[in-house]
Image: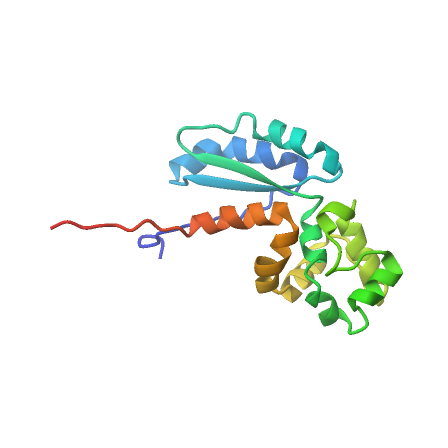
Length: 188
């Protein structure tokens, strides 16, 4: 219940990568009034390239400083789908044919051996190309995204994939920090 919760998390889809920062800034005052102390935005780097990452990070972080609420934006390199490309077990849930070797021989990317964050320019397109191999598709439609998310092994993402992806590791470290509850010492 909200009256006893030690942590409240609100997830919002702002329906467009280019609007993540403005979406947050437009709602900053209201979020502060509602008692939120931290906002973590998530935005894809794509269509910008890896070479633009540091400049993009610097630009997107400008104007976020506020004494009342901490705001950070995580940049998924190149897209959040790069994180999913390296979670290889979900491919076998789609179709047993989608082994790492089969995927590599058909699209040039191996879900276990390669790092999607640094080697795949357009991860959503790569997911689509892989799914097409077995008669499927991925177009970022709600039903397709839900199907993908339902098949992911979150333990694998948390334990293994984050070691390949600095942007996923950054995101998980920030989310983990939400759960660092400080001990409350009562004195009588």
